[in-house]
Image (cartoon, rainbow, N blue to C red; front, top):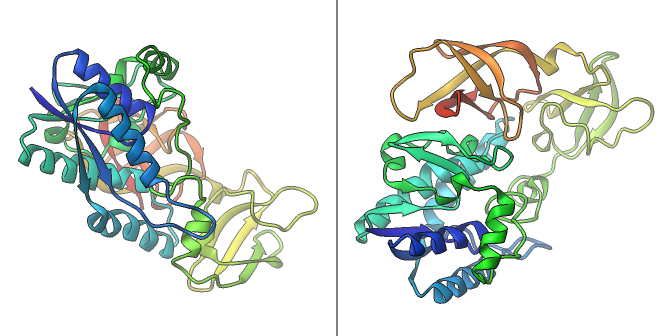
Length: 340
């Protein structure tokens, strides 16, 4: 059985390829060239990652290819992210990358090239097209996979879903993989260590505006652009003195950011979440009660779903327009939607 493994140059995808070779698959490593642009003070690590992936492929004695998705990636992922921020929303580009690139473009290109199936280093499990949480709940990545289709998952292998991250490191070390000690990438999925503010600054003009205390309705400071702030944010306000301030809203037309020191402010907490662009991995579920995750690593909480409105058992803090809410039934990831 021919499997094309998405190899990013990291330890997870390297071990994925190694395990599939050991399991007797006909493995081909594929590096997806999605983003190569350098930014001021930040060199894009794509060339180093490509070299690392190629080095592991040589170690394993497998074929290796490069699929160039840069043009589609810019349009489907990067432009989407920038447009969402311009609208005052907080998108998740990793989710869009999985939906549009890894489990669509890559899958289609791999199958067309002769693969029977694809594999990635995601921490998740698939059983007959059903997406389930990884054994390592701390590393579980089903939150980022909820917009993938059941058809795509039926053609996908996730060999790491049954292991913990420490186990993966140890197994990579045992096999002498050159990426065994390589650190995990941080920051935006396609840029590396640079922060979202620095990235957006390359594409949008910094426009100073007022920071307004909602309790006193007074201007208490200035900001470089409302686009750079998100609900619940505390750091980066630079207003100082007294109790910490939290962002509770913004007006993109007026370029104003609204803050408060009141942690119990109603705008910070939601009992109801209105979803748009609902996506179900398989069939729409019939139960009304679920557990949900409002952001990656957020605790799972109970909720009921009616139409496209989630009613929460307990209020959640800083649920922000543009973010994804992912819906589970036990270990099974059913799908989810984007906060309206």
